[in-house]
Image (tube, rainbow, N blue to C red; front, side, top):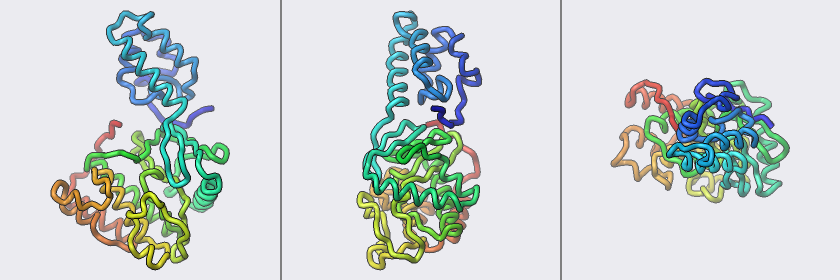
Length: 305
């Protein structure tokens, strides 16, 4: 199977170039790699993996880092081949940053897939950029770009700034174009795209038309929803916007997502935005962009992760 990823292979060399590399060059490539896809063609097949081992293994190379590089390429390949286990509102799933395979409750997965596909079919090209994946069967997503789960992730302020901006833009597009609220914008349903500075949204299990009755919420992240959801049981733009702000606080290191732990350590206007209440996604997005313009320099900062 071909993974549709947009990566730089061996610093511009073609995908067979590693066969011509000496052990020192290959070992350096391995030690610098973050994921297995940086070492081989996007297929990442076992032939390529074994070819690398034939170059860098201590039995073949006298380089002092040969053993370390061998251990690392073994780890990277196992992650690429099998993924690691995370969980979302449907149950457990495996991901290796290039695909995601669900193993949870089938009826929940089916509902989420159906809702996502319905939204995708009526979405503009811009909104579709937030769903850069294709379903392979009923339980597997294949990402177009390397996608990192936000679960357990922390980022510097300059990166959280654009992540929140992307999520607010997603909400604005979703609400205005489809009349739907996502109602589940939590770390297990969100992925970071380092190579494109993008955001990928999954987990459409709680999608509800705006103004209609909410039937389900994310139990694990219940405290992230505004109180009015449990009082009125009605889907609102406010709910999605509140959860985006929780994500922002979470990524800055406040695991509660409430943002109060950031008051003394982070930019005052940014924290005040996280603690504020907004009910219109367009107004909220514009307010946020004005706050960024006032407090932070306009510059592109590479995300090396």
